[in-house]
Structure formats: structure tokens, C-alpha cells
Length: 315
Image 1 (cartoon, helix red, strand yellow):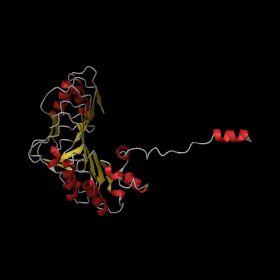
Image 2 (cartoon, rainbow, N blue to C red):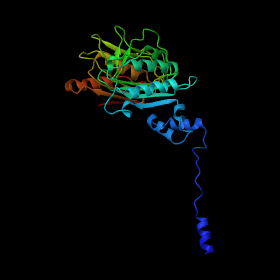
Image 3 (tube, rainbow, N blue to C red):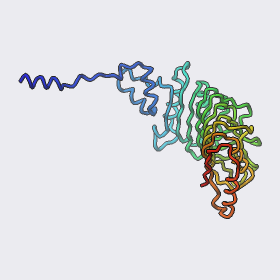
Image 4 (cartoon, rainbow, N blue to C red):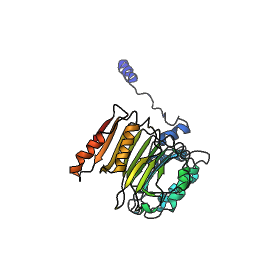
């Protein structure tokens, strides 16, 4: 009997310890910041201490379908975002604002939110508007002067002409998909950030009838991926200005089918001749011009390369 009692005592599980509750609020808030906001809010039912803890999280990761699957323009969704931005500690900086929604043509709230984000010195913005009317909304130009912004991801929105000097000194990543440049007679210029490392432009366009050029000023760029298209017209191009060496650029992928136009050859020549550590340049050729494809490829492959290890891949 004594031997059996000793064995039970030996294998008895130690009493469980609530290590989570022993952590300070600041650390718990950091843990909650890794969860989608809808999941962070659910922790408020755990105890009195957790009731308002999620409100201390300096980030928002939300989608309108978290509130309603049938009504894209959900009042509860709008009220929640407004309350979150209003209740956030006025002295704290907002780390991340991640939003996916269907504006259903209503855009006043988004302009209000972006202006608030700039005031709160947001670091990361990721906004996806999935509505058919999203291109009707130009983002407020206050975003062009957000000095705290580190990464900007926009989808389904319009970028207006800033009319002023763009000042984004902390920006390292810009990711634009299905975006429209509304710049009037001026060419859009991606400048004002000497720290820009990663640029991705996918299915971006403009409405003008003239030749359209996107100018990129990013001497420290490490990765570039681009696909710019026009609406029922040709002559949509990417240009690096001012012309200078690109000592950090390692990977480039141009997704718009190349047709051998002068501006296209100029871009590829500039990238190959001025990128000292470029490892891979991926190009997409226009398959509708099979006869000319081999000639274009020969011309591209004959361009001198500053980087001896650069590989040119044509798809």
C-alpha cells in the first residue's frame, strides 16, 4: 500500500499555474497585437482585468465582414473603427492599421480615418477597398506627409496629385495593387523617401489620354516589381529619376508584357547598367508578337550588365 501511495505521489501532476495572468499589461497587449482585432476583442470576457485590455493594443486588423456578411456598409463596423481611433491613448503612436472592406460608394469615413492615422503617427497602413466604386475615392493628400510611415499598402484606391513636396522619410515599403494615379497633366513621382527598399506596383493605371510615366526616386531600392497599364491606350511606362546608380537593388520583376518600345528598352538598360549587385531581372514578353519576340529578347540580352552575377529571365 505504501509503495502504491508513493508511486501516485511521484506521478502526481503539479498544480497548474496561470503564467499568462502574471504577465504585465504591456506584454499582454503586445501578444494581443499579433491577433486579428476580432479575436483580441473576444479576450475581454476572460475576466475583469481583460475587459479593456484589447483597447491598449496599438494596432487594428479588421474586415467589414467581421460584422456582417450581407451588408458591406455596416454601421456597426464604422462605429467600431471610429471608437477605436477615438479611445486610443492620445499620447501613443498607432503601430498598424489594417483594413479590408467594401465602401459601397461611401468614402467620407475613410478620409477621416486616414487623417487621424497621420496625426497618430501610424507606422504601417494596409487598406483594401473591394467595392466597384473604390476608384472614385482619392486618398487624402495628408498621407503624403506622414513622416512616421514605414510601410504603405493600398488596393483599389486612387492616388491624387500631391501638389506639394512628398515627405515620407521613414517609408521602406510601398505596395500598390489595382490603384489609379489621378495626377492630371503631371507624371506621378514616387519620391520623398530616401529609405525606400521595396516597391511593388501591380495593375496600376491612370485615366489620361497622354503618355503616362511613373517616376521612381529610390537610390536604396532593393526589390522592384511592376505592372502598370493604361486604359485603352499605349504608352504607360516606369522611369527611375534622377538617373543614378542603384547599389542596393537585387531583384526586379517587370510583369507588363514588353513590346520592344523605346521607353521599355530604356528602363531595362538603366536597371542593368546601373545596378551593381543585381541578381535577377525577370521580364515578361508579349506573346502576341511571336515574330518579334526573338529580336526583342536578343536586344535585351545584349545590354551590358554592371553586375557580373545578374541573371536575365524572359517568360
